Length: 352
Ligand code: NAD
Image (cartoon, rainbow, N blue to C red; front, top):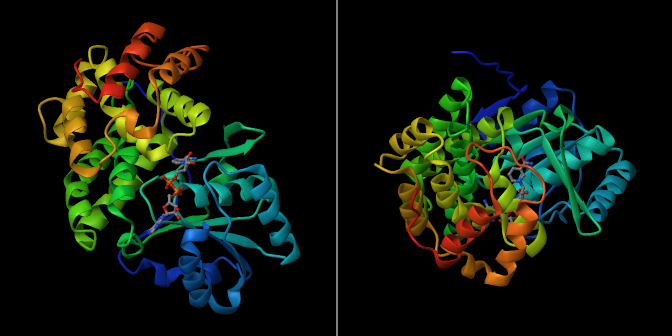
């Protein structure tokens, strides 16, 4: 065995009711003027934070949207300056966490992340920003949240149609790392337990959204999967999802959720041991088919036609995705990628 491992400086508070610790945690760090960030839909969550932290809240910016547009970052940055804030608090999914990260990158403002989906962005040092239709991404430890509060009570009202795909999106971060060409054993341990926790909880989460035990397990799984990709790698699966999201504006979580089974099938012959471990974590005989079945249990969007894509779009996407080299366990060829898209377009059972 031979490997290298560098953890990120994560700080996590996890548990039902953990949100109540926020005021004391701000005081411990001398943070006294926070700008609370949310999407327009989660304004009520931002107001709840404002009430909880009282005079430590300098204001609310509720305009976070998908893909972190540069104009949104500029708007939040100018409000942060005018209010003379000393930190930001993101409450929401990956879009809101992403805005907090962009502000940390541009202004050095510490960010506290309070995730309410399973996106896992709070565990990574990856930032992204979109300008003129182009998304730029990078890795920088400056954007890693100062601390993250995982409170499953905040996820009880996350609708089933977001919970299911968001959970499989999280799982993708782990699956890709457990099935890397040379899996890192520490990252694999995080990844496999994350997969186990999500596979065991997501079917319950979508039929009993207020089941706090299932919600806790799912959020714990998301935390581990985020850690796996935060310390680990991306591969062909992410390339394909970013191509569809970037060029055809498909929803982030749904795209990951639909493609994952086919991405696993694509690589399974190249990495049989890692793929078998993923199957064991899922509690099934075949990893790709297990993910396919899980998707059908937890989401109504199960093929690329459900995301509005046409076969002509997929011809273009296969070209874009294979224009530059992509690190992946199995060789990446345009024909195989096009075939993968075809299987996902028809939503057919994956075969290795
Ligand atoms: P999102 O943040 O856009 O949230 C989707 C919708 O769900 C929003 O309207 C949001 O307000 C709402 N919502 C969130 N939590 C809720 C709750 N508890 N109750 C009710 N509504 C709630 O979607 P997402 O899938 O969480 O994040 C996707 C974005 O995150 C993408 O842009 C993706 O690129 C980014 N991302 C980045 C990283 C990273 O490491 N940088 C990792 C994962 C995802």
